[in-house]
Length: 377
Ligand SMILES: *Cc1c(COP(=O)(O)O)cnc(C)c1O
Image (tube, rainbow, N blue to C red; front, side, top):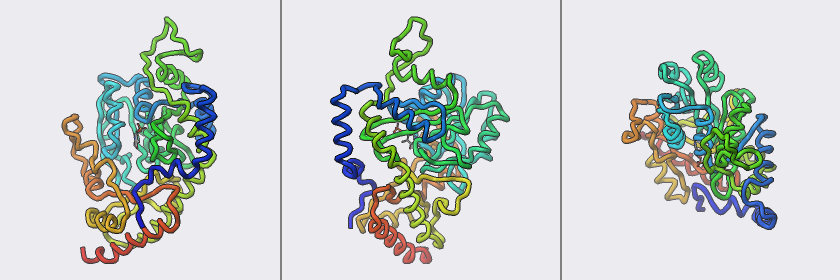
């Protein structure tokens, strides 16, 4: 059996006829830029997440940048974020003109450690940016209380966490705004780039709506009194149409991911040298969507070689680099937990279209590896 880490054509092939007619319908209507499908998609996001406003933008990275700029983050400001994050979060803070303040992660779910955020707060700190890696939300209640205590804003990088909940609430609930990415391999993947920002703040919403389209107002006109430096960061209408087609199935995608994660966790438990993500069925605070299934093991190199020899693809997320390793970008920082995590982490195949026999084959090969090597290590 051959199981690539991610089977790219499959996100199209699984419902090809439906997508072909969607593409045909949309293109025949002449709806290319900022048409009905974009506003319909924004409405879908609002209904699903229980937030007031959503703005479709070009991608998840631009969603972060526009959010930061709309919140007035700029030169002289500091934003606190974890070392365990995608470089996009740091890039948007930099391009907004502000500085990144990296903090470490906890060893329980490998997300920003709320208990160390306080040590990074200075007079210049303006915001905390939790990054919900792998489809699990950070400890948003502690983060929000800290932010309230120090008068800081909270911005969520939810690129991997559409549908994830913390104490029953989605991205956008505990913060000033949150963002999503619809990159093809994300849980809700388009056929190209796409992103969105969600917020309950009308002012942020209006600014980001203007910014994504060169500062134009609702009538798509640029007025002489405009006071925003906009840009082009529009979500393609065709991508929005595709995402709308996928939306009704999204809950079933998540259910399948959680089912696979549960199967992995059940079968992989009990090995000394294998750390697993929190088990979906035992977690009452968090509802995780498993954008990725990430494990940690000091035997990573040999495990990956073994699985590769069996035709199973794995990857090390972000090349195994924490943001604190980007020394030439001025981000060097001692973050022991982040470093340990990146030395041992690996992603197993995880997506809604894996078949039962594929999941069984992966499971069997991982278990065989640890049965042979766990004790001998
Ligand atoms: C994918 C991703 C992004 C960036 O999204 P793009 O749509 O690719 O720009 C940002 N943050 C995290 C955590 C991501 O996984």
